[in-house]
Amino acid sequence: MRDPLHHLHRRKRVTQQFEQYPSPQYGIRFLDRLLIVVAVVAPMTMLPQIIKLYATRDVASFSLTSWALFCVFNLLWLVYGIVHKDKPILISNALWFITQAAIVVAIIIYR
Image (cartoon, rainbow, N blue to C red):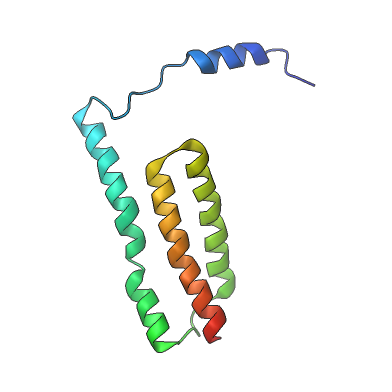
């Protein structure tokens, strides 16, 4: 059964004023740009770990369950970023997913 007030809620959403993008305020515009950089750089911090993992083939200290769950959770965040068209969330979680999937693949291969 539909909410009897659904028309009011729909009208409220349609008439809301959204913030302009890019923001006219320097601080917010800087933060938006900074988050794009962080979205790319943060997942790259895993590259030394991935390189070491593939070079040594030592997966004894890695939990397949944990890393597989990290992949699933990042995949959900990736879908969220796609649905909401939010670049920092989309970029960051796509790259995190790739790095975590590389670890999962290494655990499966070298176990």
